[in-house]
Image (cartoon, rainbow, N blue to C red; front, top):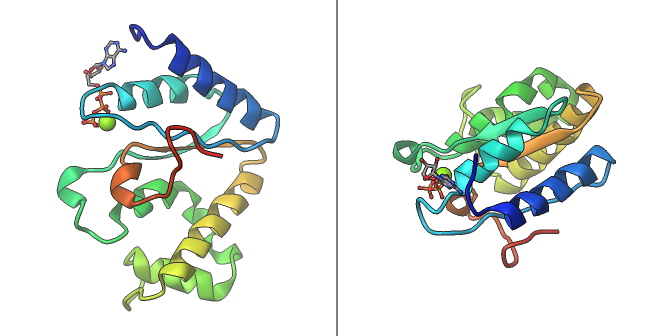
Length: 148
Ligand SMILES: Nc1ncnc2c1ncn2[C@@H]1O[C@H](COP(=O)(O)OP(=O)(O)OP(=O)(O)O)[C@@H](O)[C@H]1O
Ligand SMILES: [Mg+2]
């Protein structure tokens, strides 16, 4: 039970409802450490019954490991890795240390992650909730407190 978060929970519930109807939504939760971002994400994940959830919790000590959080996020979708364009799959596999080599191509890695998640949506034949507890440390671009 979250105290004093009705507005934020309503906003997240709207994003979830929109995703269920096939319209994607992005919500960025921004705030000081301990303010309750993860608690809100846990609540929204609990409400996402029937949706496949890809989640990165972000472990502080692994902050310096390149693409460490990305592996956590896309791990359940790796089952369909062989179905994305080969160069993207290769870049992602290198980035995630699933094969030898060093990932230099950040664009290819990003494109691969997007392809993989898009494909995972079809593979799940439903909706996907991406939950990232450490987006700020991923240098994700966001505009204010609410995304697209
Ligand atoms: N609205 C709330 N009502 C009751 N307890 C809350 C609420 N928000 C957060 N808490 C509690 O406060 C503590 C810190 O919250 P949380 O871990 O969600 O913060 P955070 O913003 O994710 O912090 P960090 O930036 O360090 O990851 C947790 O024990 C959580 O259960
Ligand atoms: Mg947190």
